[in-house]
Amino acid sequence: MLTLHTKLPKASTGDIAARLILPYELREKCRLRATLSTGEDVAVYTVRGTVLRDGDLLTGEDARVVQVVAAAEPTYKVTCADAQALLRCAFHLGNRHTQAQVGDGFLRIRADAVLKEMLAGLGAQVEEQMAAFEPESGAYGGGHGHHDHHPLAPVPLRQKIHRPGDPA
Image 1 (cartoon, rainbow, N blue to C red):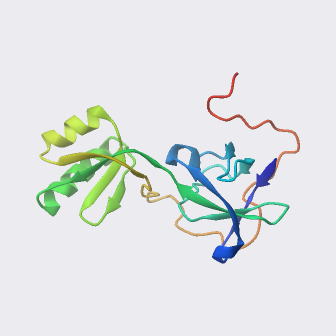
Image 2: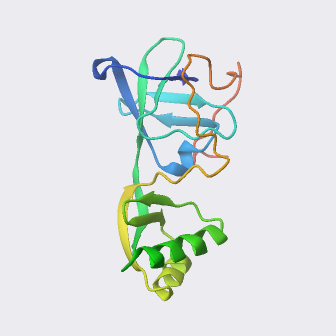
């Protein structure tokens, strides 16, 4: 099984051997077993708190380059008649510690019926969409990048990586 543990700052398109397509929930995990676009199983090891972002490039011992792709997932696109109303919605989402993606004139959140009702009550238009979810990293999210070739995390020698849905 291929093991990915090092983030690369860049690579040419021709160097990308496969894509790792994951929803946001799995891009937050520090230990992950998944399947590449080629069908090959892969283990990903990152430092706790690392979030893989759309377009990130990873590699391992065999030097193959894998590109992270944000999968489309159930989201709500939130728009309002004016900026003040949208800021009010953002305040109420933040007050509930809800992760949100900030776009040009819109917010995007994970699909949640309770939040949809709250936002509609605030006068927002809430549209269900299958879209990539890239929320803000937050004030303490470490906006710095790893521009070196050091491993993201130590790679355990004998650790079984469980995939959601694997039998217990």
